[in-house]
Image (cartoon, rainbow, N blue to C red; front, side, top):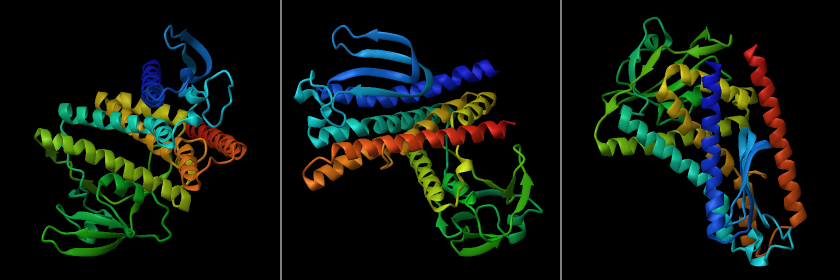
Amino acid sequence: MWFLTLIVFVFILGLIVLVHELGHFLWAKKFGVYIYEFSIGMGPVVYSRKGKKDGILYNIRALPIGGFVSMAGEVYEDDKKVPKDRCLCNKPVWQRVIVMAAGVINNFIMAIAVLLIMALFWGSNSLTPKIEAVEDNYPMAEAGIVKGDVILAINNHKVSTWDEAQIVLHYKNKNDYYEFRIEHEDGTIDNYKITPKYEEVEDGSKQPVFGVHINQEKTYGLWNKIKYAFEKFFAVVSSMWLTIAGLITGKISVDALSGPVGIYTVVGQSVSYGLYYVIYLIAYLSINVGVINILPFPAFDGGRILFLIIEKIKGSPVNQKFENWCHTIGFALLMLLILYVTINDIIKLF
């Protein structure tokens, strides 16, 4: 099983990285940017080929946890042998923004396409957090919540999908109860203060349990399947933003994050569950990569776009040394975070 998990792990990460970097690569080529290398993976090169027509070095590297497109003049003219008009830094701001954003856009397009394929083959479900059933002797049933009720908000956070609701339920809660705003089938709305039961899960931690099952009603017709793909995409994006907001405000612990080891574990679980879950994981991780990369943080695509927006507003480029230092520090902090999360993932395994 471990060998199959490893193959699927490498395939999923490789595919997501390939799609992302291909976005940067294709638009850079379209705008005439000089490209040194197109690389999938990080670390030592295991396969290399130089393009006969374009002279670009195409590499596959040993570690399937990233990739890059090395372009001339990504921040400033760093290679005097390359014509000025082929340096990225000398291209119009709008072209540079497209090159930087193209990777994220590719990830989002792939995720929507994968979700659509899933809907076509396995069907689509309603995403509304509508209650299908409540379990006897559990908090929801004891509070008087019944089948057909819809969750509108949890602890004053509006939720329109079960994806969002699950993230909010993982927020740190200063009270021993959760506030639910519930809409009944007759249109009336009530607020409930519900104290969950705490039950132990596989990793030994205790999680709040409410004893509720959410409606997974199937939807039919091509239009509903297309609609589902986009709705599910935006539901996952929204849950990602809720997670990021929770990390910033301290409502979610950094320990909840997963690195390469954690992702490998999730891949293993998905493989054991079946093809449907493996394919969904491709869409889910592709959205994650896109959302993280568009954040306005140095070293991310969003950070580079932020500097381009500043350049456009002030009418001149940001100081080259300052921008380079920002990206270097941002990358170092990112590596430290990945190291911390990876160590934490390994500790969880034991």
